[in-house]
Image 1 (cartoon, one colour):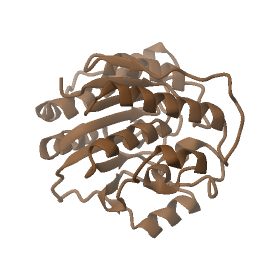
Image 2 (cartoon, rainbow, N blue to C red):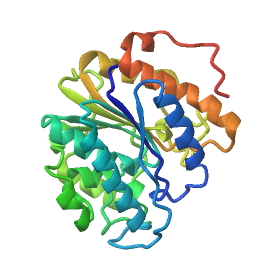
Image 3 (tube, rainbow, N blue to C red):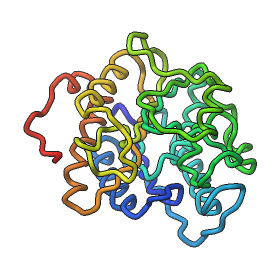
Image 4 (cartoon, rainbow, N blue to C red):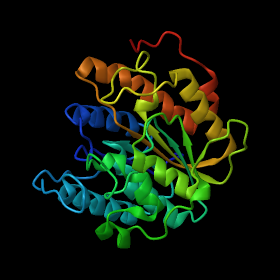
Length: 276
């Protein structure tokens, strides 16, 4: 299989609108488990303490350490991850960056997610994963993350929304947008926050701020997979309000996985798919 493991990482504590994330995380894990053996990160629901500028820090940090331990013992070189909120990717990218030192990260998201604990107006950790992987994590997390991702190997796609702190870090580190014409090479991790999608096509979201069409998203993942070596794909922020929405949204998640594994599938739109 192109991915060695599927990591079910149902963290909800990083989001400020988490009510439907557990349902979405379970549905995403069911899809991702079809493409590689599924391993689950246990939830820590016992800790609700805020600390280090982050809401529900204790649970988030405990889950981060559990995910790191699972990944380290897995020996996986390629990881497919079903979130949860966006911050699940801190552990995953940290792990992949350790075994692929020239790792490129493509952050497909409507939001910059680049606040730090000092700049975040909300304290929600799903708005901080980019700063964390680039070396600005909360102090207790930094010793466990190793070498930060090189900002020159980080590219955004689809961003539309950010706080002052997000934009400040983007300017400071000169974080670039993905050039549609540039060749993508080397080992690549794709972070795909479903809220990058146009909510008129994909309404199963807590933060409906995106504008990317589903077919364009599938084509983008397929293009990356054709040109580069996709060693990681993380899908986050699926927030269906009921099981019917979970079923419909899961079809899109499956197509994203298939595009990463078999880029030719990205060239075959499924006009009959019901995602309304």
